[in-house]
Image (cartoon, rainbow, N blue to C red; front, side):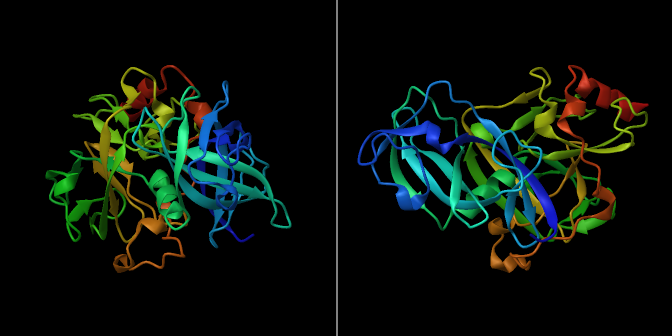
Length: 333
């Protein structure tokens, strides 16, 4: 295993808990593509709950289970097998990514299902699609940090512009490198459910003038003038989903969301609705989103910005009913 470069947590079900109730494989659990039969009907076992699978990715694109995980075997290698499409009466389509944990000899020892929309234990799901070619792109969409349509970005001139009006080459203000040109802009429309349900940070929550709506794993940069959080440092990177409190930071479930990604020559902190937030970072997880014309080697990571290393805040430090208010106050004085 080569050098570990990035980490990711995904919410998964054990595939064995999603069982064929009618069809050729009746009684069997969900598995990898070679074992599946189209049109089989599946249901989730009652009482089955999502668990967090912590993944580490190396610079050679291998994935292993991290030590900080709720399921899987730490240190075991994991392969992305396929993307499945199910149909049900309650939703047009539901997509599920299949991750296979293997032993030292490369044999499957556990299979995980990463649903891109919630699966209901009372619903029957008919398998209508098995796709190996597009699975990496779909996992990249889960991992990629994104701003929603309408988000105002601070330009190099100081002007605020909606993200959907930006073009490659536009000059944007960055925290560490002054004015930088946008290299590439990604856009996708997703169902605002499950892994794609955006996080809404209400106006004034973090001294922002307007609501900021971002993808769940989008990291915000916080500068603490006083260390109210007890992190031991002034500069912090905090995932939006770790700030959800049901009041001024909420999950927006339902409907659709237009997501945009901004890519620069290096990973940057920019300003969205006045909040400092990260730009897209190219690594093994997100590279499949890039077209060849973007100019990066899809097999290699983008350089980390030295100023951002070691700033991530662990979730347990934010497990406090007033964590958001503490961060707001810390940034003021």
